[in-house]
Image 1 (cartoon, rainbow, N blue to C red):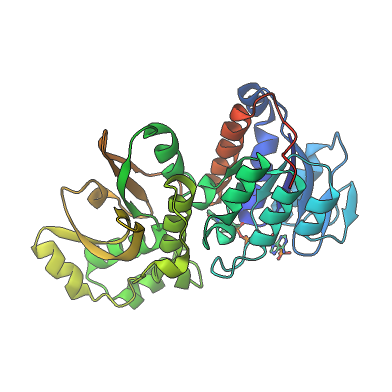
Image 2 (spheres, protein in one colour; image 1 turned 30 degrees about the horizontal axis):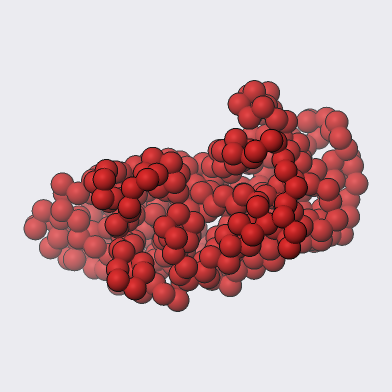
Length: 348
Ligand SMILES: NC(=O)c1ccc[n+]([C@@H]2O[C@H](COP(=O)([O-])OP(=O)(O)OC[C@H]3O[C@@H](n4cnc5c(N)ncnc54)[C@H](OP(=O)(O)O)[C@@H]3O)[C@@H](O)[C@H]2O)c1
């Protein structure tokens, strides 16, 4: 499987590093060799020689740049690399504000139009409706977005595989580790939101710009991605009322605790008469609720279906290692369903 990686940031580099470290294990598990044929950033693309030595690539990963690697270098961004390079699969790991959707949307569309399967860690292409899923289906191509929707926490795979054949009625998720960490710190120490956020930033538990995390947008993105990928929905961020945690006072958490509840930033999806209703808001959960035990940086998701009742998953690493491993997991599961190895896509 010839792989183009778009984005050589924390996730892209970690993914490439996993490919190097686990080459043999992955070949045995998937029955195919996973081969890197291009790595692209916003300004340039590296095309490795067929039997590239791993040492220079490891050095480039450590140095966070591939400019001096042996092989061909082109002044292509990821979209140009996708259109020029012979490949089978795109790993989409570019940055950018998911609300605006770029550069991920352009890259994913280019890949599907060009006949590449897609595995994505970025969210931007999937938060404004299900058009990419529809395009993939029309082309007979696989599109996997588990790494974008909780990464190591198997939000999508739980629904797709473990609940197959049931009718999912509702979904509840604590889908953002940073806001869960901050709420935990506020509850434990009685500190104000701003102080808990500052402490989290000092220890690296929150980004310098945590807006998307604490305002609930990251949670809303993941909910929308899950709904469009496995619940048959066609929704976008504009359909989701979102309230974050920055307005919470320590007294709110104390009052909840006095009533035997714990406040969490909860994303919910409920099946309604007119389709799926999504929302994100701080929610007091009874301590007996399965997601009430999600602690620190952890995430969790709980599905309720007609035949299997409530099924919950909790945990998974919330960092580039977890995200890169989720990309690899999605590639292995994708390769496993291809009829006879890689088949030609249907015409556009
Ligand atoms: N970090 C995590 O733990 C995590 C977990 C799950 C999902 N994700 C998602 O995974 C994606 C990557 O995250 P990250 O932490 O690796 O971000 P990052 O460190 O900021 O890296 C982003 C990469 O995207 C590249 N890029 C930007 N515009 C591009 C374009 N037009 N074409 C090709 N490459 C472009 C950047 O290259 P330049 O330097 O040239 O701009 C950079 O290499 C994000 O969408 C993020 O939301 C991250």
